[in-house]
Length: 178
Image 1 (cartoon, rainbow, N blue to C red):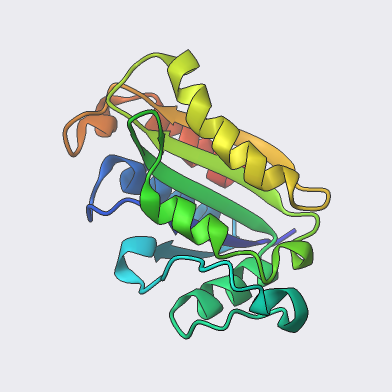
Image 2 (cartoon, rainbow, N blue to C red):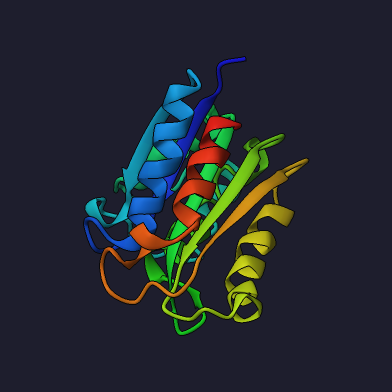
């Protein structure tokens, strides 16, 4: 069955390690015949959530920025891939800001398949679980969300280090089998 896959890449560096893992996921998914859209969050204007409550009644955000387009794509997706570089043992600010801004539609995201991709200088998988738990906290707010896999791109400090990692093949396989 052809799926609609949305990849949300939070790397602020074009060609960064988590972005390269996203590209591998996309390659596998496209080869499997899925429709794939990758969004580089750093290229979008996404303001912080102000907690104004407008979205509770209107199911849309009062702010006029690029987040409305992203929310529409999240609602339409069958599969959402969330990728982040790990900074100080947690997701980067760009990803957290995006998650906070899903408030208008998180109840409209039932039955999503979720993949999480991390790239970090640290090689300790236990330490990287802190970031995964942040993603799982978001997933727990979605009705019937299913975590399908986590790519741990560890030991990748410099741009491109991830190319030598088994995480590249894992991301490709996750995409191919999505």
